Image 1 (spheres, helix red, strand yellow):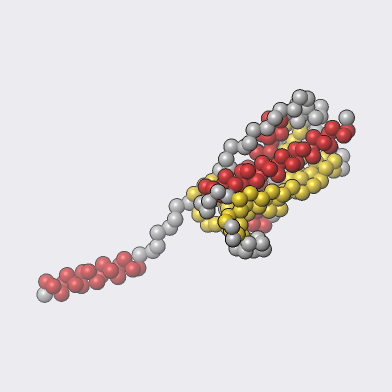
Image 2 (cartoon, helix red, strand yellow; image 1 turned 90 degrees about the horizontal axis):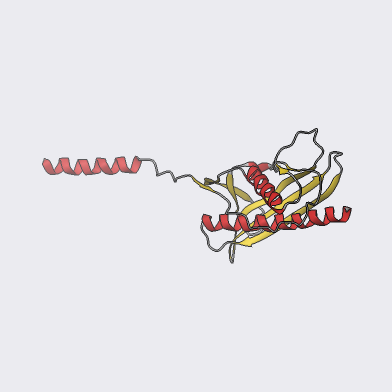
Length: 203
C-alpha cells in the first residue's frame, strides 16, 4: 500500500510539472553605445539656431522592440518580444544627432525643441531601415534615414537618404547594439558632411 501511494505521488507530481506554464524570458533593454567623438568646427556654420525634431518612424520602426529580418535581403521583418530598446528609436536617434551636432558646434544653439516663432534651421529625419539581419557571414545591422533640412519657409535646403551597414562582432544582442551604434554614427557622419557643405556653399 505504501509503495502504491509513493508511485501515485510521483505520478501526480509529474503531471503537475507537465502542466506548469513555461518560464517567461526576462525582458532586456538595450542602449546604443556611446557615440563616436566628433571634431569641433572652427566656427559655427550658421548664426541661426538649429532644431533637431523627433525622427518619424512608421510601421514596425515605431515600436520599442528590436527589429530583425527573417530573410537575408531584409524583405520580411519581425519584432523581438523580449529584446527592447531603452528608448524608442525615434527619440534615441533625435538625442544622438542633437548631441553630435552640438558637440561639433554647427550652430550657436543646437536643441531638440524651439518655439515655432523662432527663426531657425530645422532638421527632420525619417527611419527607412533599422534592423538586425542574419546573413550567411553572420549578423549585420542595416540603418537608413531620410534627412531634411529647411528654414522657416518650409523650402528644403537639403533632402537626402543616408545608409550604413555594419557587421556585428558576434551573434549576441549586445554585439548587435554595438553595431547599431557604429552604423548610426556612420550615417550621421555623412549627413553632417553634407550639412557642412551646404552651409559652406552659402557663405
